[in-house]
Image (tube, rainbow, N blue to C red):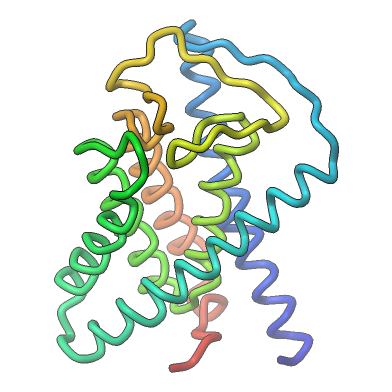
Length: 210
């Protein structure tokens, strides 16, 4: 990989990552302004933040290569039907989270929508780097704000406490257990689509070839 591609990949990843983190954080800030949650600072070490980022990055890379680059890519190349390929792979992606304790119908639709966001990001940007960035940022945001992720408790830089743990927000499973995750994912989808429209298409050339 030459220097130009490294710079381009890094730039695309940074755009997708920061955009997702920003949308996630803004929605939490809005909930805080409406007095629906409390935010407390924990101040964990930088090493923990760095290790958590690498873990989230590894998960994002693995799942995006399997589900979007390979599964969606192969299915779309054979059927030529984007929405069928997108929704089917997103359906499978969602069901793969079923074994986690607390998974329910809201979690199912949240992961289904998440998979759809990643497919659209991959399809529109023509590079797997973009959905990897969004996926990594989604997971890292949950860690950063100490939100449970797939029923696993995290200890990040801030601690978020929703004043009402119901279907609007989340349960013990995590934010994907609540309708607020649907709002977040839709907001991320819109913002990512706008970014792709605003940034010259030539920039989002296909980097990873089949």
